[in-house]
Amino acid sequence: MRSSSTMVQKVVLSTLPLPYKGIGSWTTMYNYYLQQYEHAIDCIISPYVANRVEGIEYISVHEPKFAKDRISMYWKHYKYRGYWRALKNIIDQNGYVIVQIIDNVGLLRAIDAFARKTGRREKIKILFFIHGYDYVMEGKEREAFYGMVDDLIVLTYASYRHQLDKTSSMPCEVTHIYNGIDSEKFKRVAPETKEETREKLNLKKDTVYFLWLSQERPKKGLHIVLRAWEILTARFPNIELLIIGTKERIEGKGIRWLGRIPNDKLPQYYQSADFYLFPTLWHEGFGLSLAEAMKCGCVCIASDIDPIGEVLGNGRYGRLVSFPHSPESWAEVIAEELHRYENNDKNNPYQEHIPDKVYDLNVWCDNINRLVTKWEKRLLSQK
Image (tube, rainbow, N blue to C red; front, side, top):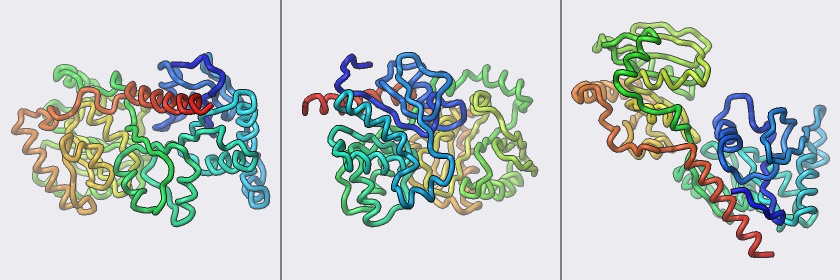
């Protein structure tokens, strides 16, 4: 996929070093893309990277450490000037660049402003990735944002439609690419393997397990599920709720708190659970854990708040709760799905509708390559 042409350079601008050692959804995907895929990246401009990928040029830059926001009031975009200097040199040496910026509006504004000020904007195609649902922008600020982007990459069609409703002008192109998940790690296992994993994790054989996995922020909806659980455990003695991700210990009838668990250990918990609960109370960007649980075979029950309905195939891949702020509504839906599950010999009734490679990470990588190739061809044709 790497082009031998030096006419168009494919550059990623990132305020995080790539590959990234920490935890994050888009950084996990880019780590895979850079290290295990035939990627279409020539250069990464970022803070210093120790574990560099062979074949990629790295340019290290650093944001000013002191008073950067105060100085930016007088010297606009001061904190990102190092990124522009590095990018300007690439433009001057090669002619054209395709720039990927991931979820950093400040960096986008700086690059667009510097490029226009120096007469180099036509030499750049900016691909901007929104890894959420939307940004808090109104009126002229929102219109200006879309005017800085050549191609806006959204996670869901719901996000695109929402943004379109919020503005009277969106001159950029828009590309839709779903998040990708490693299908070799997050996958269904055979019933006998599920039993063995449960035994290893000290889970009971005949209990129906529900899993909730996130942080304890109110918008993640755990408090709604806990109130619903009080109703459910009074009716169903053979259910248990596994809670992963919270710092605070949570106790109660039919609840097992597991604390924080490393990411590489999570697939076995998805694969051991029967149900996954996703009671979000806000507009998620995508709901990565929901998709991971779905790929591992869990019956997924989630809030019907955009864009989650789209991620669940508008109800084909799992059950949507139409009144997600109500514990009673959650209790009712969970009870219905529990009966359905048990009447189906404890098999996921939605499984037949879920594509084998749904939200596959390799498909995401292919989509990124196609996106870059499209813009490379356009730049070469305008030469």
